[in-house]
Structures are given as C-alpha cells and as structure tokens.
Length: 113
Image (spheres, rainbow, N blue to C red):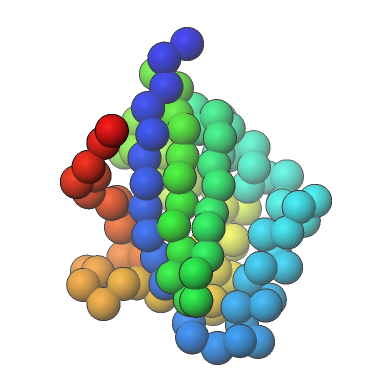
C-alpha cells in the first residue's frame, strides 16, 4: 500500500487552562470512538498532533483512497464530527494568516533530504 503524508498547523488559544483541557481530550485512551472511526474511514492510516507553546502540527499518513474534499463532505454530514468540531473551536483558532473560519492550514514542504 502506498501512502502519502500531509502536514498541517493550527493554533490553540494561548491560555494554559484551555491548552491543558485540549491535551486531556487528546490524551491516549481519551479519543472519541466516533471521531477515530471517521478518521480511519476517510483513508487516514496514522495521525499525530504535536504541540509547541500554543502552535500545533498535525501529520497524517493517508492511503490511496484518501481525498480531502471527500473527507470534508463526510465530516459535514456526520453529527458526531460536527459536535466535536464545535467543541474544538473552544480551544483552537486559526493561524494569523488563516482565512475566516479556517483552522488547520496545510504546510508547504520546502526541504526534503
């Protein structure tokens, strides 16, 4: 199976209490089954989120069935995902250069060894 990697960035609101709550939602064993199912059903085979200060980086490995537009459509029609996204707006905010309503921004690779 061939995979492809996508990398994104997003900011958390710069509030230690909110950051701690966000980390708790994402701690090992705390993931909501409906959310992890929606991720896997879209062809995402691995996803990791890293945090430095209040800036996050998400790295996704996807299989050949993954399509970002299809994932967005799946998410829009899934009440559990919509509930999750609403909750995450309490913690997440777009990068300073994000468009209105946009949180996760795809990173541009500028170097590869």
